[in-house]
Length: 178
Length: 336
Image 1 (tube, rainbow over the protein chains, first blue to last red):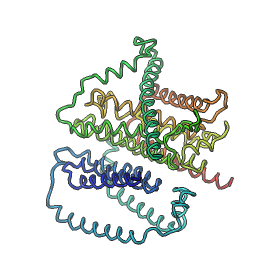
Image 2 (image 1 turned 45 degrees about the vertical axis):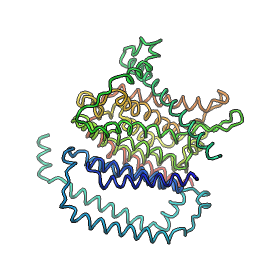
Image 3 (image 1 turned 90 degrees about the vertical axis):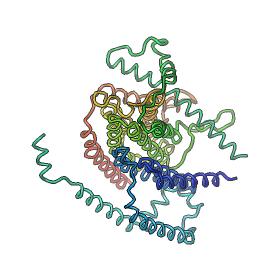
Image 4 (image 1 turned 60 degrees about the vertical axis):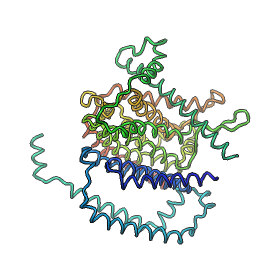
């Protein structure tokens, strides 16, 4: 058996089992732990495919930089509150979850037919390396979507700051007390 | 059959690296304690062996045979897992750190690194930052207020400095034109080829980030003894306790010092005055100097407040790295 095949099946199994953990674990900290496990297993799949750059960025950005904020918020919730389940949210979460599932299914089935085309064959990739391949596409063909994505993130950030801003009166009070 | 040989080869190499790191970390504790002692004008460990030379072994035996207490109301599974989550990623960085050029012994080519992936730098950064979870989960699983505060403080520090660290690395990467740590070293030839001469700003930010990431003194708010008992590892005992300082203060500091040497001090480049082993001697010498510098900072300075630390990270360090990237890019464009 090839090493790639073994690695693929073990990472996939790990990802699926952990994904079940994300959905079904009762304790929210275990949910987030399973989420980290899923993301790391998916990064293993990327490495297995030879996409080292995406694999490392998957760990660095998703498994750490993003999830750490979830952990920060969730770990401040006391344990007994983390274990309670409120069934009324299922009314919203089940249809929305089903919608996202349909979308993902469409993308994966569509992608299965559309893949394996493009200028980067395995031989070319071996020659130029992952990083040059990604950046040459990102900064030429996909420059406009890339910039639009960063603009959207900027807007989201400003919105978050605006929502999380303290009231003016509170700030003045704080200054006096200091 | 060839596949099996590769796997066995990598396995043996990994075991050698891990055992070597353990022994080294044990003796780094002695180095630190001696150094701290002399900084504070006391002799440090003195009685176990000649000038305390056997002290690390005595410490290891003590930590291993100590009663392993697990408090009643902790989250048991996560409590055990957290100490491993802090330790394993720290030692995994060794997989991508090169310690020298490949050498030939008895006809076999021996490479003094486990893997040379061309994204080594990002991978090292990724492994380094995963150990944050060990600290946060240790704080949460302990189900006690001081570890909780310690874990959250550490998370706040790490989030800030991880970003600055990542952007500080961009300067050397732009100069070398590669992410592979081995090729970055090869790009720095000669005394004035070392990137420290071209990237002083990045080096300063990198140094601050090492201190913050490894929780050494100006930034050790997560275990501030006077406020938080011992921080996130208050409820731990025995070897589970031992893994935290081992991972954070010794292995992480050692590995990040190695990164500093590779990125800014030309790695194993140096005059060939020690014969065949001179690359290793130069690498270890530089690494030791950086490590001692960090110890020096640790044992001399008082600590910052939490808000000051995050303020420095976001308002000083991050803009400095952006400035550095801007200047470096400008110089590269002008000089071609």
